[in-house]
Image 1 (cartoon, rainbow, N blue to C red):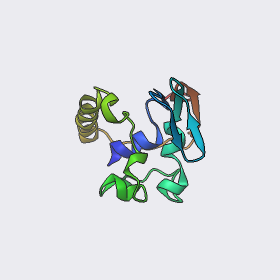
Image 2: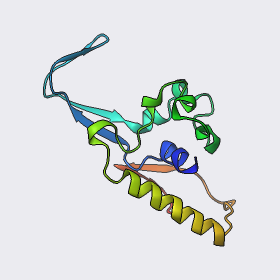
Image 3: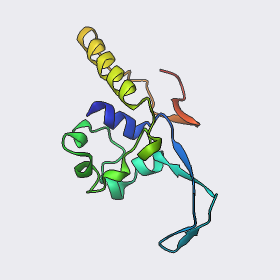
Image 4: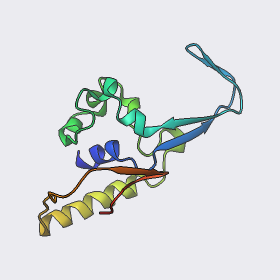
Length: 133
């Protein structure tokens, strides 16, 4: 739950690109063959119509049930590692390593947030804290 919510708020890659293989009509839009489509994961993962009014708050319990329940019945709205045949090969490795690392860290350390900390992100292809960690 914590890892999914972290990936929702702070995706490691904020945009994905796909190439249109054949002309297709989506609603009022016609996409021509060989056009590159850029999708903003950041915008998708922080859309209040999909995630609810508390979209900008870290709420790990959002993922307590299936993803479609976290996304107002739209499971296709959460894909931090891509989707389909081009899903990142690092999906399982990354999530398993994160679970292990997080469990080991939490066994040995306690964390508090500095009263001087101001939450502000910088977009440089990936999201990074403006003033470091």
